[in-house]
Length: 150
View 1 (tube, rainbow, N blue to C red):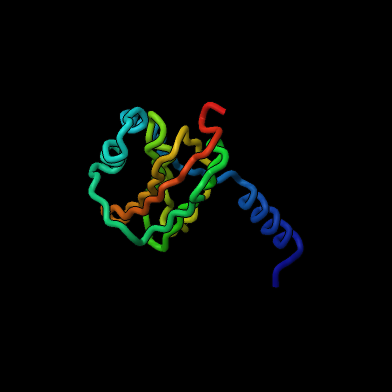
View 2: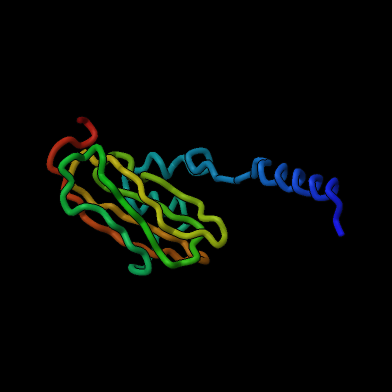
């Protein structure tokens, strides 16, 4: 049988462990892959981030509006059932094509939603890497007003 002091000691120990900050590791792709952020070509940005620009269409779902009335806040969602390790969102309407790169933790669920800016009508592309193979989906978004300039 456990006595009250041991019970309280174990309880406080468990509480302390549960409140301790956990460490997360993230890759700073702006620092690690600076050329990817300055290129104006989608294929070049994909090559810089993943080491290849060869993609297979499918297994990735990209949701974005057909028409964006305000180019400053375009909602984009990328989802997939793949056990991917990296997700990238790109567009070809702005001078810099790469929008975001996410490192997916092992066992993580790929379901990311962001808001992006586009200066004009263009294509949005989502890439998911699984075991060195790239899967993609793309969609054209028509921007009517606003854009990056307001």
